[in-house]
Length: 210
Image 1 (cartoon, rainbow, N blue to C red):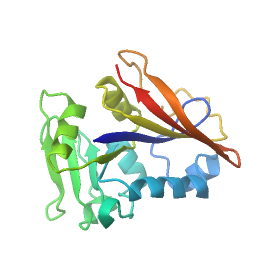
Image 2: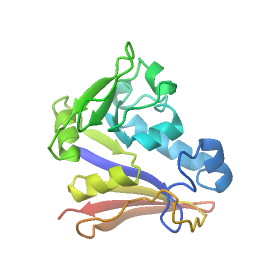
Image 3: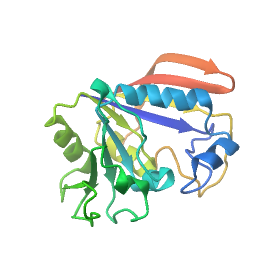
Image 4: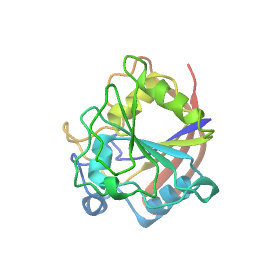
């Protein structure tokens, strides 16, 4: 299984200018472009599963309506210990397999088809990856945000990082970070490719495992 972290970041390491930032605001701020949007869609087309956090899902309000590997919708796994708001489009996307991952059972909207995976005292990243392996998945995307990224880097689970550096500097201590500190040890990466499109820089790294 290959786990690829897909992120868009400001030059100073933030993934949004504010919490729960909607796509319209992200575009106005300079966090996204048509090229970056299509880049993400291309990554989803090759994915079996996508992992993200509750804050990211609340901001987007639902999973991407994009089929993945073998022309099937990827299995979306959302980390949350407090559940998700009933009004999110996420609950109505019954054509997309969805799971909430949590340390203890969380409330699931009846009839939504969403599953709950509880990992208890086990490591949260490894527990989800082992669960996805049992389904034969080979390509997994990690969409973050910062707390979820920290879990997966600390548990040595990320194989690749594909990051888009956006032409914006946020400079706010309360903005969401690419990784929420601390990491147990620094993570080293090796550059595999780079591409510049307008003012956006697309970088592909291989993560050097501990």
